[in-house]
Length: 576
Image: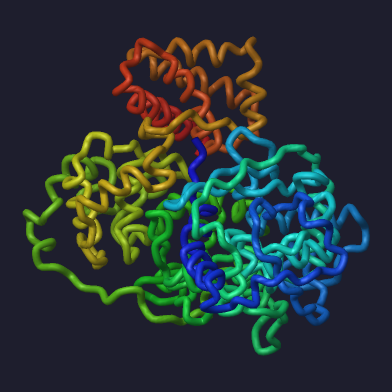
């Protein structure tokens, strides 16, 4: 099952405000004028299908046109230059910018066509489904003009004149230059049309009301296209354009996500979304990125892993996989350069609790029983193999959620790091809370020991990507393998790989995995070792699920052992 992570965070944080504003507007208490329909030049009839036009809603007032913006950079460039003239160049740039904007993450569902939408966003007040953004004229964006697409991107208004929910990060996209928006549309229009209607949203009153979105927009969505600041370097300007536009980092990393892209939202200072803690990514030396080098930050953003920063988890890992890993190195470094200029207050005041400095500290016995054999008594891990917990940014976040969720859901291989099993399956809520508080206070760490058994019990149910992970066996179904090169190898029955996987038993695991890894490397020598590790784990999932000889309670352990053995073999043969 594909985790509903970053996209759900957008809806969950913002809709509480828009729904309240909508209710007030509908009852005439505020913004009642927004409920009036304002005709839009060139708009189709109100019944015409368009992304976001899924339920009755107030028509939006016509946005004021932006001033002409300077031309922006082609894909892979670090500083702005003129837009490429050839269609081919525009399509290449459009694809790159689409990856930068992380469009596929929201607009592709598990097992569905890319950009066809339909991804479910589970909310406390119902379920929302993302729209189709393929070139299909009925259910997609096939009828959108450049002007329509600009209005959707910058103002959150679809082509039939209705507000879309701010789950679409238009508060951040509002600063994107028009020519870059046109390039994204050109790329999407060049992709295959998928004639597929998304399911109707399943939400209840008053969250069905949208007039209040206009009120929220007026308060928390800044207007105006990004323009370079001559007082800043070209690299910092480029980084700001990406961080505060395409990448919409503060949508998750703001301290107050309800307040959109505004100065009162505690920009980039970290918070909590969908039961995951988002760290402070300002240059604060204690709770932010100030204690890490540029190279460490680059490794983390590009690969999702670094020896000093640890492994990206939850929504951040999806962001790395779908978006950041595909960006040019210069653009990643530009993002870092901009973040270095953001000096904000620390997320919390560091302090040490006396109880956690004693030999019999709360949670110490749990750590020695479940964690120390890999992460070490000193919390230093093994360089390049097992992340350190001492000084780990995830461990030191203001909230304990990420440590809890990692224990509950496990972690797949990332960068050169191996697999962490879902140890939480064999631990009580009290044990998980105790060991979480212990590692947050042990060694040089001084984060608040604020984990509780109740929080653990909640996250076991609701933490997206952890509650139903690949490794803890509580997923609704096995995920789809999305590595074409590996899928081709597995589809070739002549190599016997799938047959070998189906015949694996506990005694034959070592020999079988060694044979499988050797055959995969021979057939697909360009596959990265981390992709082989995670790809074979995904491929083995339905096999172990269907294996009647493996007890239901042991299936997640069998899968984790298989994944660990694949990783170990790849390290042994020098692939990593």
